[in-house]
Image (cartoon, rainbow, N blue to C red; front, top):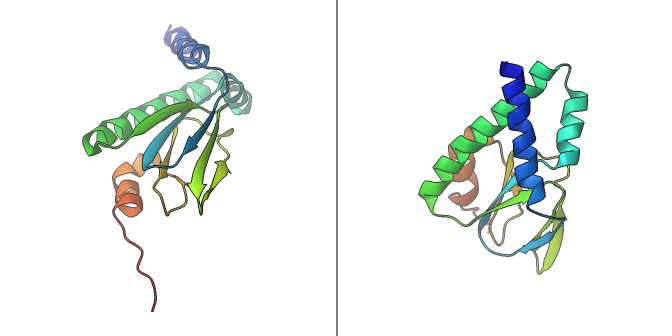
Amino acid sequence: MMKFKLNLFAFLLLFLFNALSAQKTLNIKEKTVVIVMPSNDRINQLKKESASEDEFSVIVEDGLYYLDQAKIFLKKKNIKTIKINSSDQVRFLENGRFKKFNIKELSWDIIFYMPKKSAKQIDITDIENEFQNYFLTIKKTKY
């Protein structure tokens, strides 16, 4: 019964995120957190790569849990957040040009972006340190 509920949940999750959007391209040029949800293709790839249904269920549960924890933390930081699908395209402004960031293989992931820095896919299991190191650390230039 648990497997059925998890499969139903995964199906509903897929429907929700993939029914909402066709592929789109986002050009980001301001301080932003991008939340990447898996596309149908990515979910199918994860299923094929999983040794069993149980392993796939654990991947889904872990991804959703850590993403939820990260979203709770980020909400307190009052930073612009965009949710996209891994079939979308995202480009970040770097040195006056938009540079594509490959998200096709991402699932329940987060990308940090701030002008004058390169976009960075972060470890969502360590959101507090990742946030501190990316947004609150100032690079010192050598003289």
